Image (cartoon, rainbow, N blue to C red; front, side, top):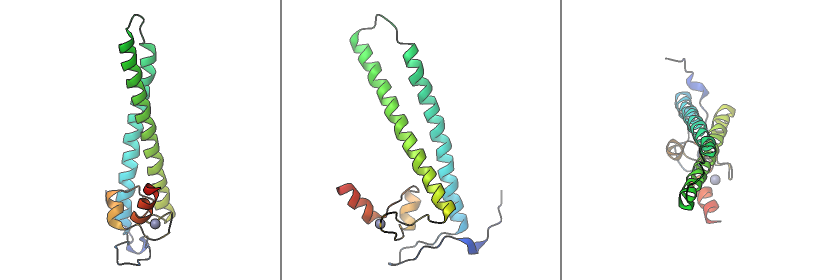
Length: 139
Ligand SMILES: [Zn+2]
């Protein structure tokens, strides 16, 4: 599937320290595709986990001992936590896609400096540069 790419439409963020921050349309399209694929996969996982969570209610049989019940509760809570985590990732991916579409992708949400291409290629949903991220984690 060869899409026509106009090279003059890349999102260009100002470089201050020589970090590579220029994205070509093709590169952005690839990142967008990666994020979109991940959203689809995550939504499938969420749907599957929710089915399991729902069915674990129904299959709750009588006569189980407390250890079994405890293990099941633990298992269920783990599924719910995973689902919440997946939902969070979906939201982050959707936000990254919105930023690509808005032309603000690759700019740190905190200090508004370029995040750096290498970091974004490793973590496509990053919204903070390394310095801001570290500051946030220390908090
Ligand atoms: Zn920053």
